[in-house]
Image (tube, rainbow, N blue to C red):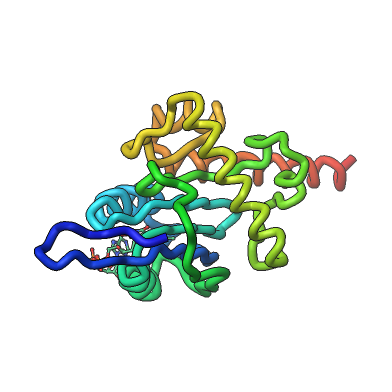
Length: 206
Ligand code: FAD
């Protein structure tokens, strides 16, 4: 689909594109106290200015992002993403022209994926989140799932461009109020890890 930019005396017709990629968080990304919130904050600000919309998912050490906008704006963002040392192994799944945006009112919605967030069996089958092992079809299924979530939120009147950046499970949300969203996520991961180790020890010793 084309859109017309009327900001100048000579209107410029821009085609609409989508860029979908996956990447892996680095130790730099993991060591930052609020990496996910920092990314969400700068993304909302920049993307609004660049007329980019989309969604960023994080889970199990991986990112999955879909961004929509003009080819030039997406290329500029892709070049910044390639320089960002908070993630690595950026792999483009799709960079193509589209008819319309999937996430019209999300300048950048960040979602932390947790297995129990969805009851959809197709999506459950994609957990734990390992997007590098997905087929193209599974990547598309996941994108459709995200769009479904967006539509659901929209129908419930919950989609606002300035939505809170990171979505958590009820437990994560409670903890995040006490200690910050990013730390809460890693605390949960650590507690779960410790429980697994204790269970293994118990089995070995009994
Ligand atoms: P500057 O602030 O000048 O950044 C300079 C350099 O430092 C860049 O390499 C930058 O990536 C890096 N940097 C910035 N902040 C930090 C920090 N807190 N810790 C470590 N390094 C840092 N940006 C968008 O505008 N839109 C998006 O949708 C978007 N999605 C992202 C998704 C992921 C998974 C990641 C990792 C980053 C994303 N970013 C996004 C951020 C993007 O990579 C740039 O950092 C940002 O756009 C600012 O670029 P800059 O060069 O103007 O910023």
